[in-house]
Length: 341
Image (cartoon, rainbow, N blue to C red; front, side, top):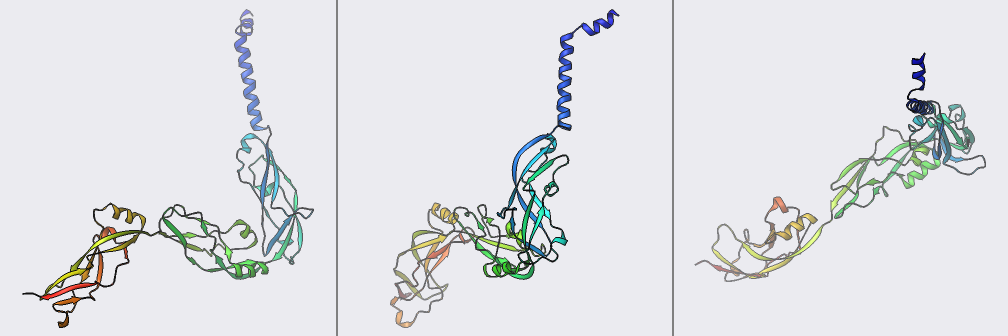
């Protein structure tokens, strides 16, 4: 008996602390399993899926246009943590509500938690709990793709970006007749394509804004490819070059360059090539009077040639082949000609 009394009375503080800890563990486990927490009210976008009709307008019961609803969530904390950050209220309209829809017809659509596709044990209150839709019948037709605003952001410094091609240039869609007429005129817009990291021409699969996809049915078997042309912005670099002579392999004449002894030209090319050219001791271009195939007439012997062509050549084409020579005169002003002795 004394032994039992000792078990009950000894180490009372330790026993009390253990009891408190056990109660706390039980409480938090029970809260996780059955307790309900609330998440702050969030605004959720509305989407509707329907066949053969388009939703022209979404309003509340008072006729005010809306595109979002307020959602209050409640449930165990573990389940609430599984709720996606970006909720969408996506409602499938039954076909019997749209089968005989006329342009401008209005229907009332109830919204419930099933439209949110929430994790188990999460409950939702949607405000308003129903909306009114204005419908229009769908028709089929071809519309062109509008690429006027498809360049997203600015290209990298030193580059330009533009639309090189769109394929196909038009696609077949289903939409209300008024929308098909509109997009035939204006084109179907696509989402901007970011170009800030591009350094070369690149094809992209076009995507359409969600607002367009809600009103226009775009078949998934019609992919649209946008090719963005990315090119370096050419830079100019003025250089003064000596002029040489390119002579025939065999000739009976002596040639002496009188004028010009040097010319100033512009090297044009991508930024990286221009910067590399500036680091060289002499520019990677040479200029010469091209006499290799020149026919000297008897009247020019012991006289002056004034129509010999001036040409240029890249000295290191494997490194500087992207450079252009701008501003080179067509002909040398004076080259004297004498017979060899």
